[in-house]
Length: 232
Length: 290
Image (cartoon, rainbow over all chains, first blue to last red; front, side):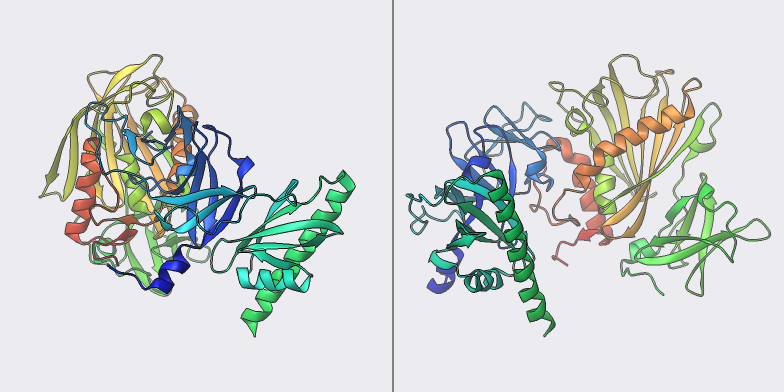
């Protein structure tokens, strides 16, 4: 089936969902969110990041409940294993049966750039064309990911009101408590946004405390925008 | 006030509102209040010692059986409550383990109860242990007369099958679905290897995604302390709870292919097929997606 070009482009928008350094090779599984889609992220031994629908195809269990065993993600419910290509690699309850060849998790396209893991909303999208290029001296120190109960548009409006400038897709630059900051916006759902906050330099502890304080005010004001919009 | 349920198969069934102990001492003026199928029901014991229940001003059909209270929401039960002869069989010890609240569809809870494949993962060191993960082929049959499903000739290696087990055992199992919200399992009785203990799972659906799972034992065990037997069951149910609360979608999909089974899921497949055939939709996503 042919999709309208506009819709296809929109679906292929890449979004920053997690700081890259959160994923350690063949070790942990982290939940992330993309336009209402729950994701399970992990990094293979070879270093490539996997972004999967957070749901085992067997009985729907969240894959983030599982663990990484020898470069496979093992589901917490029945121990079904999936390899770094998303294919089913073991069904422990029926070890002698051939594995169903078609059985795989739903995987999303992933890229790593500017200190972040970027995921495309369309499953199986092509390699990243429009992910921001590396070379971000402004990303020296990862501050925090801030969950905000407001649509991404309102969060962007609040950043703009605070003097931030849109630099690239989902990327805003400005200052927080006087420190150079880059904020990457991740549209978690239609009504909630995750703001990933980086600083240009490693702060001292009191400076970091000030940035945290300022980022809480930023969150408060963004949520106030959303609630005044929805109540008017 | 009315039940928030259009599923005739559940409205005409007998659904538990818990063990009688919850209603002891409760009166019409101060009844036991609990949620069933999305509505609050009031349950009490009248001056003649009879149990009674109401939804709003409307009187409900209620009966006491197996130490539990059962309500037929529509007042027109399609059949008698399922038989549990083990409850009154001489030599068996009856232990009520009460309930545990779980944010899950009642159908997914029952399916979990029928499943051996999760033992080595969810109940490691109790009901199973890696690498002994294989589920041997077993038999599934539908009892058309009783409208029940059976899984027979099941067996599984268990490091600690019950409170009284001191060593690993190859345990025989039989499973029986007695209603969409209830099942009974039979497993090798450790102190009497020729006999089988019975464990009943009775699910009270508060709504489509929240339940209380009650557990009743009919055991051959004269030595274990009651609190230990209850504690063991609560340990097992407590291990299942976080898994059950993290299944997506919350309601159980009945359309084949939405979730992919394997050979050891024969009982689960039969359960889902049976639900679809009899038209049970409460706590499910029906085959047409509704």
